[in-house]
Image (cartoon, rainbow, N blue to C red; front, side, top):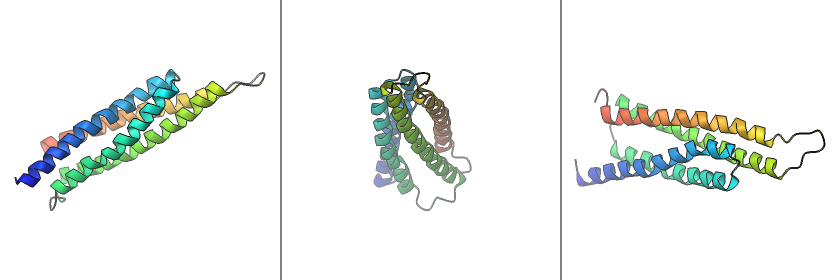
Length: 155
Protein backbone atom coordinates (compact mmCIF):
# COMPACT_ATOMS: atom_id res chain seq x y z
CA UNK A 1 0.00 0.00 0.00
CA UNK A 2 1.45 3.34 -1.05
CA UNK A 3 1.67 6.42 1.14
CA UNK A 4 -1.27 8.02 -0.71
CA UNK A 5 -3.41 4.90 -0.23
CA UNK A 6 -2.53 4.84 3.47
CA UNK A 7 -3.37 8.53 3.78
CA UNK A 8 -6.70 8.03 1.99
CA UNK A 9 -7.52 5.09 4.27
CA UNK A 10 -6.75 7.19 7.35
CA UNK A 11 -8.95 10.00 6.01
CA UNK A 12 -11.71 7.53 5.12
CA UNK A 13 -11.78 5.91 8.58
CA UNK A 14 -11.34 9.25 10.36
CA UNK A 15 -14.18 10.83 8.39
CA UNK A 16 -16.37 7.82 9.19
CA UNK A 17 -15.67 8.07 12.91
CA UNK A 18 -16.02 11.83 13.21
CA UNK A 19 -19.10 12.25 11.00
CA UNK A 20 -21.21 9.09 11.21
CA UNK A 21 -21.14 8.86 15.01
CA UNK A 22 -22.44 12.39 15.69
CA UNK A 23 -24.89 12.08 12.79
CA UNK A 24 -26.36 8.90 14.27
CA UNK A 25 -26.45 10.37 17.79
CA UNK A 26 -28.28 13.50 16.61
CA UNK A 27 -30.78 11.39 14.68
CA UNK A 28 -31.52 9.19 17.69
CA UNK A 29 -31.82 12.15 20.10
CA UNK A 30 -34.41 13.97 17.99
CA UNK A 31 -37.53 11.98 19.01
CA UNK A 32 -36.91 12.65 22.71
CA UNK A 33 -36.83 16.42 22.16
CA UNK A 34 -39.89 16.33 19.92
CA UNK A 35 -41.72 14.65 22.78
CA UNK A 36 -40.42 17.34 25.17
CA UNK A 37 -41.35 20.06 22.63
CA UNK A 38 -37.91 21.67 23.01
CA UNK A 39 -37.62 23.73 19.82
CA UNK A 40 -34.15 25.16 20.49
CA UNK A 41 -32.61 21.72 20.89
CA UNK A 42 -34.53 20.46 17.85
CA UNK A 43 -33.07 23.29 15.78
CA UNK A 44 -29.60 22.41 17.03
CA UNK A 45 -30.10 18.70 16.18
CA UNK A 46 -31.44 19.60 12.74
CA UNK A 47 -28.40 21.79 12.08
CA UNK A 48 -26.12 19.02 13.33
CA UNK A 49 -27.72 16.51 10.96
CA UNK A 50 -27.39 18.92 8.02
CA UNK A 51 -23.72 19.65 8.71
CA UNK A 52 -22.67 16.07 9.36
CA UNK A 53 -24.73 14.78 6.45
CA UNK A 54 -22.66 17.00 4.18
CA UNK A 55 -19.48 15.88 5.94
CA UNK A 56 -20.37 12.23 5.53
CA UNK A 57 -20.01 12.65 1.79
CA UNK A 58 -16.28 12.77 2.54
CA UNK A 59 -16.48 9.18 3.76
CA UNK A 60 -17.93 8.14 0.41
CA UNK A 61 -15.47 10.24 -1.59
CA UNK A 62 -12.39 8.96 0.25
CA UNK A 63 -13.74 5.43 -0.21
CA UNK A 64 -14.18 6.02 -3.93
CA UNK A 65 -10.62 7.32 -4.22
CA UNK A 66 -9.39 4.17 -2.44
CA UNK A 67 -11.20 1.80 -4.81
CA UNK A 68 -10.23 2.60 -8.41
CA UNK A 69 -10.52 -0.48 -10.59
CA UNK A 70 -12.12 -2.54 -7.80
CA UNK A 71 -15.77 -1.73 -8.46
CA UNK A 72 -16.39 -5.28 -9.69
CA UNK A 73 -16.04 -6.59 -6.13
CA UNK A 74 -19.46 -7.37 -4.69
CA UNK A 75 -18.73 -6.24 -1.13
CA UNK A 76 -17.53 -2.84 -2.33
CA UNK A 77 -20.49 -2.24 -4.62
CA UNK A 78 -22.92 -3.40 -1.94
CA UNK A 79 -21.39 -1.19 0.74
CA UNK A 80 -21.41 1.89 -1.52
CA UNK A 81 -25.01 1.24 -2.50
CA UNK A 82 -26.06 0.85 1.14
CA UNK A 83 -24.15 4.01 2.02
CA UNK A 84 -26.02 5.98 -0.65
CA UNK A 85 -29.35 4.52 0.52
CA UNK A 86 -28.45 5.59 4.05
CA UNK A 87 -27.67 9.14 2.89
CA UNK A 88 -31.06 9.32 1.16
CA UNK A 89 -32.77 8.13 4.35
CA UNK A 90 -30.90 10.78 6.33
CA UNK A 91 -32.13 13.46 3.93
CA UNK A 92 -35.65 12.26 4.78
CA UNK A 93 -34.83 12.47 8.49
CA UNK A 94 -33.59 16.04 8.05
CA UNK A 95 -36.80 16.95 6.22
CA UNK A 96 -38.92 15.35 8.96
CA UNK A 97 -36.94 17.25 11.61
CA UNK A 98 -37.78 20.53 9.89
CA UNK A 99 -41.46 19.57 9.73
CA UNK A 100 -41.48 18.57 13.39
CA UNK A 101 -39.91 21.90 14.37
CA UNK A 102 -42.61 23.76 12.45
CA UNK A 103 -45.39 21.71 14.05
CA UNK A 104 -44.00 22.03 17.57
CA UNK A 105 -43.68 25.79 17.07
CA UNK A 106 -47.23 25.96 15.72
CA UNK A 107 -48.58 23.97 18.65
CA UNK A 108 -46.75 26.18 21.15
CA UNK A 109 -47.81 29.49 19.61
CA UNK A 110 -51.34 28.70 18.46
CA UNK A 111 -54.35 29.48 20.56
CA UNK A 112 -57.20 27.15 19.66
CA UNK A 113 -60.67 28.53 19.16
CA UNK A 114 -63.40 27.39 21.46
CA UNK A 115 -64.02 23.67 20.99
CA UNK A 116 -60.97 23.18 18.74
CA UNK A 117 -57.72 21.42 19.47
CA UNK A 118 -54.31 22.33 18.12
CA UNK A 119 -53.15 19.51 15.86
CA UNK A 120 -49.53 20.63 15.43
CA UNK A 121 -48.36 18.54 18.38
CA UNK A 122 -50.10 15.46 16.99
CA UNK A 123 -48.41 15.88 13.62
CA UNK A 124 -45.06 16.34 15.36
CA UNK A 125 -45.59 13.00 17.09
CA UNK A 126 -46.04 11.35 13.68
CA UNK A 127 -42.74 12.90 12.58
CA UNK A 128 -41.17 11.66 15.83
CA UNK A 129 -42.16 8.08 15.04
CA UNK A 130 -40.92 8.31 11.47
CA UNK A 131 -37.58 9.78 12.57
CA UNK A 132 -37.15 7.03 15.18
CA UNK A 133 -37.95 4.30 12.65
CA UNK A 134 -35.69 5.66 9.92
CA UNK A 135 -32.95 6.31 12.48
CA UNK A 136 -33.06 2.65 13.49
CA UNK A 137 -32.84 1.53 9.86
CA UNK A 138 -29.93 3.91 9.27
CA UNK A 139 -28.05 2.47 12.26
CA UNK A 140 -28.63 -1.05 10.99
CA UNK A 141 -27.35 -0.08 7.54
CA UNK A 142 -24.22 1.52 9.06
CA UNK A 143 -23.50 -1.77 10.84
CA UNK A 144 -24.00 -3.77 7.64
CA UNK A 145 -21.60 -1.43 5.79
CA UNK A 146 -19.08 -1.81 8.62
CA UNK A 147 -19.33 -5.61 8.43
CA UNK A 148 -18.84 -5.51 4.65
CA UNK A 149 -15.80 -3.24 5.02
CA UNK A 150 -14.13 -5.59 7.49
CA UNK A 151 -15.23 -8.98 6.22
CA UNK A 152 -14.96 -8.23 2.47
CA UNK A 153 -16.71 -11.39 1.25
CA UNK A 154 -15.30 -12.66 -2.02
CA UNK A 155 -12.15 -10.52 -1.80
